[in-house]
Image (cartoon, rainbow, N blue to C red; front, side, top):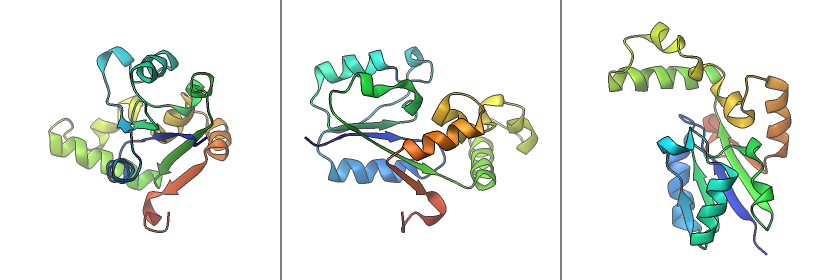
Length: 152
């Protein structure tokens, strides 16, 4: 039995490109978009309902969080994938994107929002706890590095 693919897309880490690669190469791979009702997380209940109505071989998106224990819903092994990025470069990318969109006037403004602090760590484990994130990285099946995208 092939594993269920779960692409944990952390923003500003090359995920849009990787989503396209998965769509082009994995039949029945679905992108899960953010939705107000998810509160930023695609819960086990959301996944359970989604799997009842599809024959998905995998999902990916910003709202997928590996700490939510999807294993208890999916009845086969899960192959987790994510990409990480050097934190300062990632933060500069976030600032540039927010400034381009007109959401922030400068770097200091963006830094006042807690959601942009330690974002990669919080995305993996739900809290600002580096040791837990390090443990989670070791449990993820494939961790690519944006700065070494082609090699990854």
